[in-house]
Image (cartoon, rainbow, N blue to C red; front, side, top):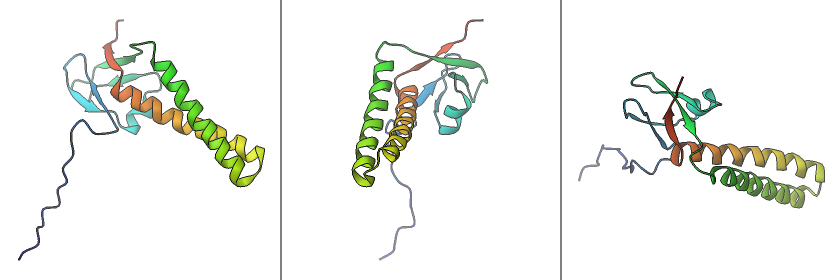
Length: 123
């Protein structure tokens, strides 16, 4: 009996948290990594294949309510947990800020990679 040395794991292509961006110029699909997310604060992304710049457009009215809901859920739950554990409102307020930013950035990156589309920059 031999032990298999094939250590490949099966991943579905659509199950990544990074999400996929599709270039409107060459239709290349590439993942939205954290490095790309932080290097494009206003949504201007470079395609790794054709190097053209395109931008993420808010394609619906529900993008902002999802962001606000994520920020509220993260902030309020962090505040309640910290206030209960430490019995201190100052630490609770600090956790409110940290939780709001943390969940807010996670939600925004997920929306950028899954629900928003790259558009051609009209100059």
